[in-house]
Image (spheres, rainbow, N blue to C red):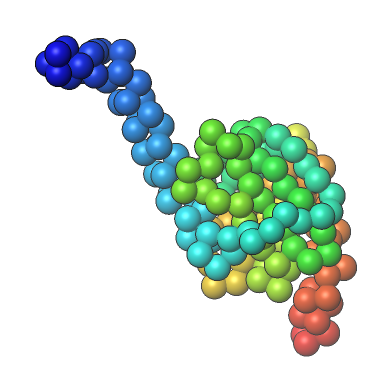
Length: 158
């Protein structure tokens, strides 16, 4: 009786399901590492939901300039006067927890053309990942950063 139970568990359908699940988790973890999400998760892991201008299913990229990880239509962003909240669609969230990056941690927000649309490049202080955001969310990020208290303090010190 116990032998038939063992053979049922080794059914090819279960093995394929297990391999696909492990492969999915491995790829998500690798992308989080290469893109720098896991690096930012240490100091900037979001502790609670944020209220502000919401952007759903947007595209952006994160990582080094030469090898960014592109998040095509699977990011959620909330922009407010305190910072930028970024999260990934649930199926891709393994090793990529929601982030909240305060404007005081942002070194610069610069405009950059993205194919046929406007975009911004967000560089953080003392962190290597660069965040590139095109479209409507980019406009809001630029505006919110420009009016944030930390941005005004940085301009006054120059």
